[in-house]
Image 1: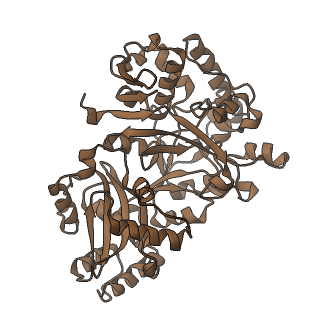
Image 2: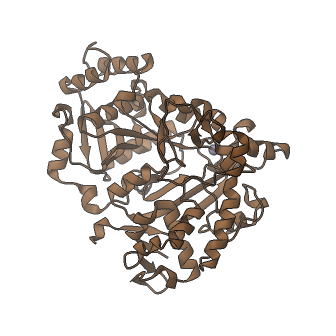
Amino acid sequence: MELNDRLIISKPLYISEAADPQCGYCKGRKDSKNNYACESWHERYAAGGGAALRTATIGLQAELLPVQVYDELCNMGFRRSGDFVYKTDPLRNCCRMYTIRTSMAQLHASKELRSCVKRFLRHIGAGAGGHGVEALVAAEQASTRFCTRFEPARFTQEKYELFVRYQRAVHHDTGTIEPLQFNKFLCESPFPEDVVLGTAEEWAELNGWRSARPGQRFRRVGPVHECYYFDGKLIALGVSDFLPSGVSSVYFIWDPDYSKWSLGKLSALREMAIVERIGRSYYYLGYYIEDCPKMKYKAKYGGELLDVCNNQYLPLRVLEPFIEHGRFFVLDRAEPDADCSDDEAGDDPLSELPLDDRARLDPAAPLRDVVERIYGASGGAFAAANQAVEGLVDLGVEYTPQLDVGLFPSETPDLRDCLADVYQLPNVVPGLVPLWQILKILKSGEIRHINTKLMIYDTRLGRVRLVRDFHQEAKTTKRVICNVIRLIGLKNTANSLIVI
Ligand SMILES: [Zn+2]
């Protein structure tokens, strides 16, 4: 296996901190009805005056990550910040963060977006030639004052100075802003060096996107910086990842002198147009948070949200009633026959859903939310996980049952471990491969797929070795391997080098 095809990753981390001040979205100060993943948890905690809200992030440090694997991870709810690949625990994080993606076909350009385009056309001296995305692209092509250029995600003094101006004006950052900060946040990525740099042909092709032939598929994959120039001055910078399935927007900064140009809104429309022209399918906008005004604007571009338990995207308009008040959802078919009456439901506690082998839900058919039955205060997931833990312990994997069902570390022993040791993951985390499925992988012998493939870098011994037989590994190493499978799946785990 080529080194560039391998993932080099840390052990999975679980980071829980006080939402006040750590959550960048709610600062731990939400309306109390919006605090919890679902109604039963709200009832449980609201009665006691409410537990202090926390953030809960699961992730891993990636030293090396192939772009196509990152694409897959994005579609499992992950995002990256520099080279940290993460998602939040929807049960315990103060805010429900949903992966949102859209496409030109799903865009219903509102009056607001149309007038934003119109204004921009006036600013770049393109007259009043329409207000749609097509007019925008044509105007850019004709403009002698405005242009953009794609280039590798690399540090330059000009970009760094723009970042400083942006941070001061928009985020009121008054401290010292080091070049290193800009570099870590907007330049570093876990992708292989040759992918980051790209080839001259790739960049030339990408910079010619406006005149792409219909159906042409561009070669560029990897991180990119798109520099926006007006009269030769850098006025904005778009940072995004070009993936096989689409373009994932990472960040956008602009010169505060041009704040009236609504460049942020405009950049999303432009990037959607680019996705289409270069032959990709989706525009990934990062996370959508229903009860956060700063993130809710993303709905303006239409689109769909990822149901992390069904591993399926569903249209935002279908999901709206389920996610109101920042709630978490897991959808299932709402079948009118007796099969799904509440009595029957009692016999089938719906332990955590598998990620892959369920039939697709039809968004046009009636759907119901089964989040309470699985992840509610009396949901089936907790008992199912405990049962799985027993089986895993029998197979010599170090897991601890969750004795008391609670969401927060103060009341739940195994969660106290998560707080004390960032390498401990709760047994139930929606969107990870459930423990019962991990047990199945071990019992069925499927685990052999990692044998003689997975590599481990032992930091104490300072050497890399191959895992020859999973069952011969130490208890704690087995747990680390199982946790990696929970996060990224069996196939990706087999292609990894885990730093232990
Ligand atoms: Zn929050």
